[in-house]
Image 1 (tube, helix red, strand yellow):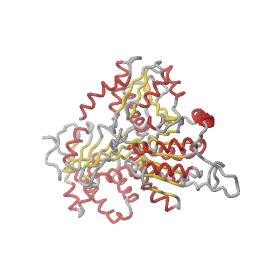
Image 2 (cartoon, each protein chain N blue to C red):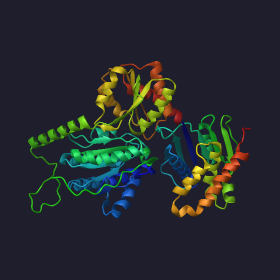
Image 3 (tube, each protein chain N blue to C red):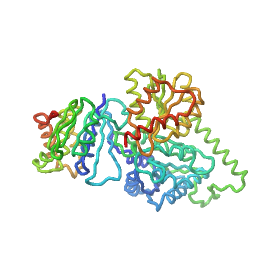
Image 4 (cartoon, one colour):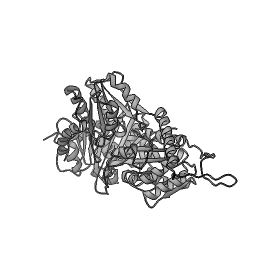
Length: 374
Length: 186
């Protein structure tokens, strides 16, 4: 199929439809409303289910119910809406049914604003809902990647009976880029042997997240962790740029990752040996890939559009063996490549200490930047 | 090689579409391209801008601090973005709506009365195409023919009746820019 100029939100919606989406349940919120709007027209036209719920709480529970039928289902929202969905998410995780959720992250905390942000890293990657569960989290950096990851998300969700998040941000949602949509897949006709679709003529199946006897709940938790181990072993995805001879590495995902790419190219033009590691799966995190870099590099710069949420995961891997620096913008502010270039230049010229807290150092450097821009 | 074009003005001036038509033409030419709007709680008459990046390799940041070229369709956009143009870059200004000349000597500034030209062509909504024509006369990242083809291929069917007028607007903009558009400081 030929490339089309597609807006991220609409591309993700259409990709889901072509991946065989059977039901969408959602509630409008900027900056992802175009996604729901697209679904509202396309899904009924195709004879599939579109339902605008009365709230995000209702939407996630509709999604939960629909997922129990084994159908391909999804919802989408933005940060505060995702926060509202957390109880339902935990129930979905506990019931082990596959769902896909797109979070087009906006500035927070609170009502915040509708500008691009990556402030949902912790709420998605490290929980949100109660109990021990790990969703798969995919972070696209372009419209094409968003399309490809939405399709992948459904396959992974069904393969592992798990929650798969697409963590995008307002930039990915609003941006237009040439991209190719996949061909329309037929709606599936066979459903898994756990799905509840009417028990006429067979023994009934029960899907639930209630395990009153803690012994049973522990067994369930153990099973969830076994699945998570498989996911960690098999599903890590990332992109590397200019890492072959790199002495310094920028680590950033999604929009921050592609801004990092611009900065890395600018630094390369000045002769600085720097590369970029862009995690595509935030969960499972590319731990072995970072581990392999550590013996041969002089420093790491973590770049995010938040106050250093992924930074904690990087520090956990590095464990003080290589100096780590951090640069982030918060609250819906998006860094320009020039800001990251200065960070790379400073890291190379002045060096970075092995000890101390990269977040404290960053806050000192950021204060004048914030004042200058106001 | 990467070219960044920022288009800014009032909502309703066709800022976003002007950027999209550049993006379509770039895509059809087989280039890498991103189009990103300023989005926010905005309304008609408020400010709008979009950034188009055209490149030969995978595009990094969709936003840049110092674009190669800026089209400023009103005074607030001129004040905000004139200082940001990359040295050696191009600035196209809607002289119909600004009351001052250029301040930068290290860029090429085109002052063009796009409102008057569009009205003379019979439709003031053509002003964005006049500005695009003026820009491409000075910044040969895409040819006018490529823009015309993009209009033919991607203009929504209901707007096809404006095709001829759009092509004329591009042409008029380009001719004005080449003949008398460039304005020096002072």
